[in-house]
Length: 443
Image 1 (cartoon, rainbow, N blue to C red):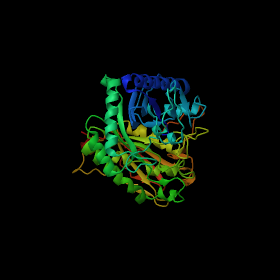
Image 2 (image 1 turned 180 degrees about the horizontal axis):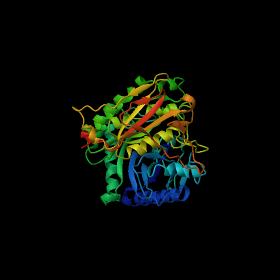
Image 3 (image 1 turned 60 degrees about the vertical axis):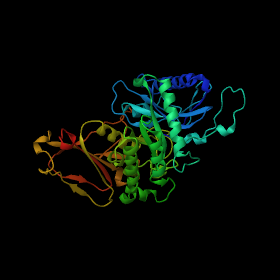
């Protein structure tokens, strides 16, 4: 969720993986201790859950690592990025855009509200880093330097051919299997972590072969550049937003065709790239682009950039006050993590209200007696004063703000008669949940 960095490991082949194992496991231990100390979580796990591979050769491995952090009572896990760099000389933890005040109570409560989460390491901020080496017998050749971010298809700063990337992923998988012989504690391998191009992805997945990838990751910034003066218009245009449908379809098709054992992941997405739009990405309007598409096309994980840092941050970078997108993400997470038949609706009209009716079609659905409750839960998200560029979001007419004790407010629904129409006011996002609904498709 925030822009991230990578870990660099220098090693020699004759080390039989020992140095890699020491650095990776030591790194994970340090991250766990840092999080427990600074954020106040329960004891985090000290295991890698996924490893990405930007670059590998006989002298250096650039590895992007996902770390799983669990609360004592975990709930379904969203993907959240955090910004750590580990250098090979002593595995020193270095923070970049991580604020100094990691003991901040608002930050702690905002993270804990999600229950448990994945922390992503590696990403675009590594392009801005200058890496130093540990003790070297001779000066390393500068040709070894590489940013390692978004190398697939046409690439950004550089690219790697699909077949070469596939071979490198298979090599990484062998390294991971060697370091972690026990399958129950073995990290999963994800890739390629870049923008989708059908020909490149199809070739990459075909040549990667079975048993290598756990998740197929692609990046998504379908709103374009953050400085675009038309950004506010784009987020309100359903036809523009729907253009990304083909990317989701193509990714899902490629995964199903070549790697059906792996899930499709949005490995990084923030709407508008280059830190988002200063008057849009932190406002209520930014919620219009992000909800619904990934679940429609069977994506298992959605990585939202960023937690803090940039205009698209979920938390204000200096005050940690949650933005509207934070509450939208939290509500989505809470509702999708429990057994509901859900119906999210978005009304992007600024002048028209809609009434939706729930109709029981006896020829298509189970009888009405299969609905265990006589009420439904409705969550109506609207901007303060009807201004979609407001930083304040209302839930069922009540502003979402921190409690006096700086806790995240409880997201309570309105209970509505099940037979009544659903009303969507202009510029609103609505979640409708029917508890104990027994759908034939789910049986």
